[in-house]
Length: 112
Image (cartoon, rainbow, N blue to C red; front, side):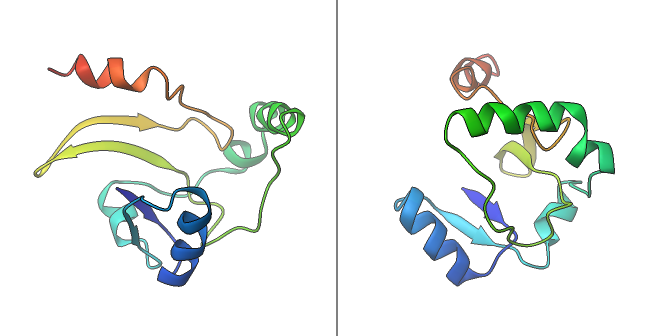
């Protein structure tokens, strides 16, 4: 399930375009973000050299930055939750950090 900072209508528009079957929760006040300890990034986390490099790689692939939804200074988070326990998490080092999603199934299987 996805949690995002926008409104329900923004989520319907986004997921309707990119992943119509996705389950998502609108969290405009960012209560879940706070509960998971996700805060705002520093200037270097959003504009540092690693972010510019990642942006250049994305641009070469034809990707571009869209209009921000919510607070663009809030860092992303990725969590595997079961019940009330966080079994796995990816802490993003900067805004251009990209988890290799191809490795995710192996990482989750290793949890047992």
